[in-house]
Image (cartoon, rainbow, N blue to C red; front, side):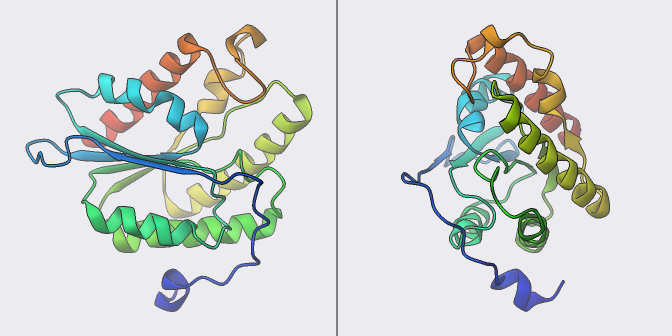
Amino acid sequence: MSTEKTDNPVRAERQREAIEWSITYWFNATDTQLPRILLIGDSICNGYHGQVREELDGTAYTSFWASSRCVTDRSYIKELTHLLDEYAYAVIHFNNGLHSLDTDRATWEAALDDVIAVLKAKGRGAKLVWASSTPLTDPALTVKARELNTIAARVMAKHGIPTNDLFALVEPMGKEQWSDVFHYHEPAKRLQAKQVAAAVRAQLA
């Protein structure tokens, strides 16, 4: 992929939601003794990041970016580039999907390719792990999440990036584990955090 496309990808502008948000934390921001990892996702990531940090205490410093941005949003790569410029990360565990459920599939796939190009070009050798999007209590929305996961699996295979299958982890759970259509109660968040931490730890070995 060309440098021009990596630095300034051209995409059809995404229609934004009524509320857009972005949360970034760099924990242990001045410490350098341990490797630093970066978690990227949406409110699901925001739900488990604190427990991942606990799981990796003494092993790695945790940073995270949780956002409503779809990879096709005009600001996604600008924000991602800022994160990559600030620190070197040993592992980047990333996801994008639940805010992309109604995004044109071909556009989303091409934008995901662009994001991976940026991660590889600016990630300073970070190992990459993709996380599949989690199911929802609405079956119709779960079908959409599964479609995006299928596309992402094809993209990750092309780039040689392993997948942490959070969809498969959560799918068998009873609906009592969800706190609403999208989100989870603490026991389910803890299970996700343990699996995320294990996926990151495997890349640190």
